[in-house]
Length: 48
Image (cartoon, rainbow, N blue to C red):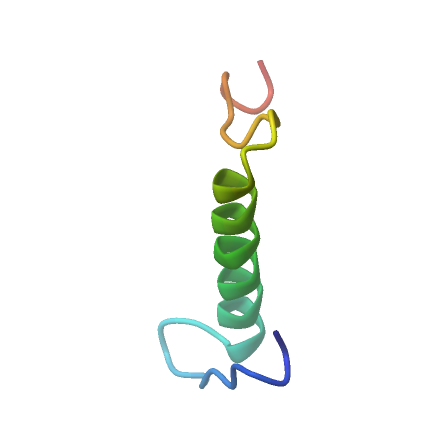
């Protein structure tokens, strides 16, 4: 992903943050489409 996507940094978000978000979105899409029976969403709030 790092070689294919070069985000920019501006006042809203850093390039590193945008890189991480793009990688997570692609991973989540792949997992959802693969049909694997894995939990992809939180079922309760963090800290509960």
